[in-house]
Image (cartoon, rainbow, N blue to C red; front, side):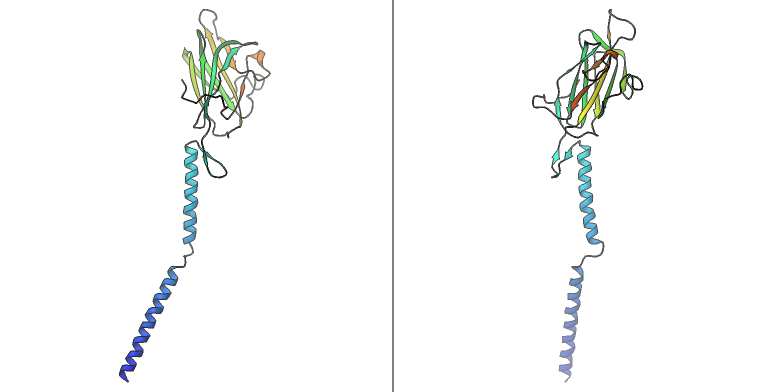
Length: 219
C-alpha cells in the first residue's frame, strides 16, 4: 500500500515538472509587447542611416533603391565678354564634379585680368540690372592683386538630375595700358534682354551630354 502511494506521488511530481517546462517554453515563444516594435525600429533606423550616408556622399537613390551618383563631367567653355556684340576677355568652363557641386573655372585670355568675380546659380533666371540693382543675390570675390583665373564651387544640393540650372558669371576685366578706372564689365553667356547693360547669363542642364569630357578637377 505504501509503495503504491509513493508511485502515485512520483508520477504527480513528474507530471508537474513536465507541465511547468511546457508552459515555460510556450511563454518564451511569444514576443513581448515591445519586442517586435524594437525590431521594426531597428530596421527603420538602419534604412534612415543608409539614406543619410548616401546624402553625405552626394549620391541619390532611384525608386528601386539603387544608388545613383551625381553627374561628373566638364562642359564646353562659354565666352566671357563685354558689350554687344561681346568683346571677349575670358572664358567660363562649367563642370559637375560628381559630388553634387557645380565648378565654374573663370579664365582670362591674353593680358586681361580680373579685379572681381561674381556668380549666381539658381533654378530661376538671375535678377537683371533693372530688377533691384545689378548683381543682386550674386556671390562675389574681390581680387587684389588681380588674377587671370579663379574657380568657384557651388553646391547643387537643391537640384536633381536633368533639372535646368541658370548661371550668371561676371568678371570685372582689366587690360593694362588700354584702360583705367573700373575696367570692363564682362559677363558669360548670351541669355537675357540686358545685353546693352553688360549683363547676360547661360543655361545648363544637370546632366552630362554624350560628348562631354570626364571631370578631372579644375584650376
